[in-house]
Length: 380
Image (cartoon, rainbow, N blue to C red):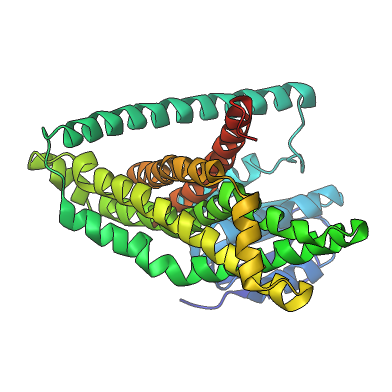
């Protein structure tokens, strides 16, 4: 590799046949073209004509060809003829290719009909959502079939896997769920007391805490917490197994991935969310009761007595009925998104995020449905 050099024969006399000659020597490549780009641009177009001698060029690439082409173009635009001499066939061909592609390109892609583009985007989104719903329903059907076969004894239930998942979902989540619901109970009691104090009805804070936590907030917040904690774990675990072809290995040896991976997680989640929902509601009541004792002067005995009078057993039953359904949905979405992982590790992150978002969304929608349903049945 040699640094290119420039030899200038000086200004021509202007008589016929005489021309200013520029001899370029060395490597006219991207790495070295900067050494002569400045001197070439500093030469003003003047005289009779210009001849650029490339006989001394060892190597040339697109950057060098572009520099020579622009030199010829600039001198020609100034009214001074310029030409390339003694170039090798490859150099001539490369310069010609560069010259052929020297044309203006629009800076911005022309926009089409914005309304039509928006309709196309909406249509694509509807198509993707519809396809996703179809896949989820198909996965739900397969899971229900295998679950039914497991419950009637046609398929074995892997108790060790269920117990392990119960520990991961429930036991390891006791601290965070308890703390969260304890604080929520305090916040509900504090905000309720502020509003009810205006009417001199602070005693009804107990009603608010009891009915709000056992029927709605306790289970809903627990389900959201578990969805963010366990649905993401399910998607990441199964997604990693998909990338490592462990799921394909299970199918190869004749084992159903749904039976081995999905059913233990679904059963464990349904059981543990039932227990965690009750536990979280109790912790919220404890937090609210503590606030009532400290700030409102309601002793624990009076609080518990009022709680029993204000909270019907139906509220607790409704919360316990919703818990297994929420647990089933959360586990199902986590496992489904894990099964959809393809390609690379980036897909694991995307599917994990989708598992959390979709499971929380479906839980909230189902909670609204249950609220309307039980209200229609007269359980207000």
